[in-house]
Length: 306
Ligand code: SF4
Ligand code: SF4
Image (cartoon, rainbow, N blue to C red; front, side, top):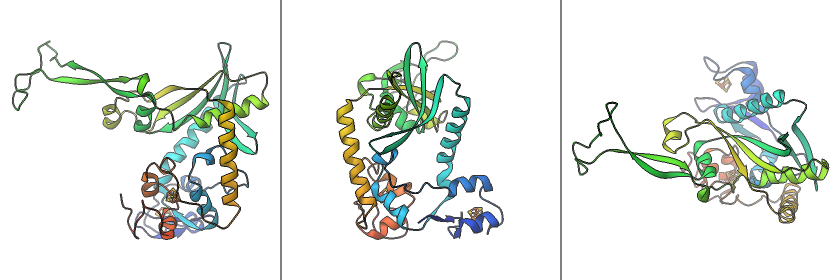
């Protein structure tokens, strides 16, 4: 079953084809090419993909079995990410192998980029992600405070309140390797490495990294989290291959079993649903999931329980 309707800004639904023919409102909420991209979907091919291994299986199952509606607004960052990948792919040269299709143990994936750099093969996964995720990956935290001075070099003091007479200070943020947590992003590049190494000998991958483009880079929110740049290269540790493969094959079996039968999969795990935030704000089939009635993050009908 496909994505069938768009949700207009006034909350009404319209069939995607009808929207592309003629907007039912005074003016379009987006251009037709944007809407075509927002209306695109990749139906389940019968094989689990690398990205599917870490997604909520119920979401894949529901979106393949039910017609559903999407708000074109919700596709903005996905479309941005697709365009970023397309452009980076266009600019890769013959020494840089981009968008390579891989398959291992029936699990399919596409690496963003493998390049030879200083005698090493480096695999890069580019992500357009929010500053919260970037701060977590880098372990950015408050590492110091520094006193504030005026342009003339005079200390800036508190003139009232409990700190009256004390010099004002500014929190300084920086990456703390001990706090860096890449657990949400470690498996995918490692699986690509496994797939690549199995099919591209002798070009074995030496290093893995995420190229993170900060979706909200430059905003007060991002800077407040200590994320002051708009893109980061983040090293990803290499995982034990046997353990990873065992996990991937087990997950593939579980997903393919669910998707080939009529029993609805359980609510996604806390990790898959971002402790419910994905269910409440981002999942395209959340209204159908809500009607199943067992999702603790989606109680009742109507508005989300944010
Ligand atoms: S362009 Fe936007 S507002 Fe117009 S019909 Fe389509 S979804 Fe609705
Ligand atoms: S609402 Fe949550 S549990 Fe339900 S399908 Fe979507 S992600 Fe999975």
